[in-house]
Length: 231
Image (cartoon, rainbow, N blue to C red; front, side, top):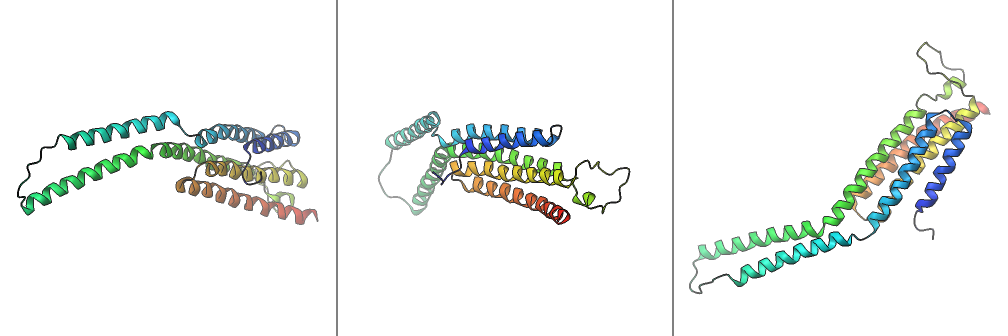
């Protein structure tokens, strides 16, 4: 029960988070980003379910192609005319080399066909994980100008300085929401590794989680600065 991620719980958590953001910051762009992340989570539910299912149509097509290849190979061997007699060394080497080359080509074709389903699933997962990496950076952009130094009175304001309309408590909540969204981004990414055992997908998931953790760490540094101010 507690050994796998539940995508429905992740979606429900994102929906609650979107409501929390809307209640405190109704006109903020962060609410829109959270809604978009929720949409991605719902798409991930469909994608991960597709990845987890065996694709019977594709498998049937691969089996048919492999069968045709084996039949063609058997037919070519059966119709091969061999004159038994004395072979020279050069002829024997030439025939052996040709046979090995044919086996290599056939083996490579078989591997390509048999791995087709996994490669298609991997491509879909990697495309979705790239989207999550971009969303993580979008979340980071929304907290970029939320500097606690403005609350602490340590900023010299210029004409180009961003507007700082939040007090310490509101800024802390805003930053905390960003951190929660980054954490959930990593959890959405982990769903792909959960449903597809593939080294490339696992590496991409780790990259998203590492990125999310790194960006969240910067946010928590700001939250800690605010905590010292409020004390």
